[in-house]
Length: 299
Image 1: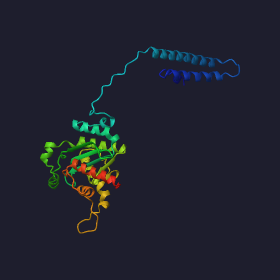
Image 2: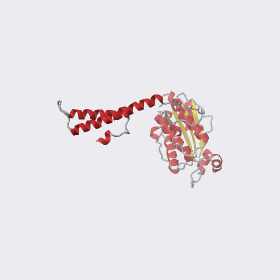
Image 3: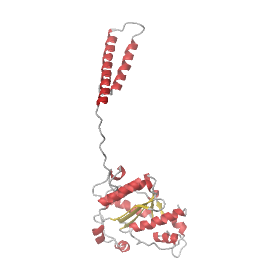
Image 4: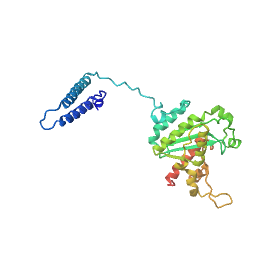
């Protein structure tokens, strides 16, 4: 229709092409050497006029482009090494993430291109409670630590401290009041890091992964976050080393799943030189066991 032909919002080249096609159409209507009818003459004159206007517009655009002054690109200031950079690390960051946490997670996102595995561990408020302490290590394939992080999280409102768990890992309500932070923003950062690591092909490793994943997902629900972790996509050093270690339950023939320190002792014939039942220290033990097991081609 004529509304499309006379649409001046098009680019000059597109408008000129439309006019040329339409002009050829109307000239093709005139058969043989016959004189065009009056309606045909009117249509041809109308299109010719539009074509001339499109040509003038194209020339004007070319002139403006030649005479437009050069615009300098604004100078980019270099960012500090630990500043937030990259959409994966900062695009959807919630309000309330501590500054030191932001710096560590931003470094981790930048280091994913050199990473081989992400090892993590948790300390929880009993077998059915929330996560109180998380620790994780991003490492290359030789076991060199690229980034590591550990933090204590306060309990959700209304959840009581489990006394048995407290005796095991030593995290009391007083400790959480003094050292703990809100779990929600940092848990969101960790979940995003796991997703980014898996996209990059970085292996996620944990000892008794199904338990840690279950408690992290439980904590996510408590904090109003989506429980997105899946232990099936991770490597569990406990599950994969059970047959290799060959430990048996007391008074029975059934194989026993090795504890973190038992697997370490089996591989290195010595006890770990770190304090166990601290999430970051346990992650260090798991990392050493994983690297040694990988060297032995266990996984």
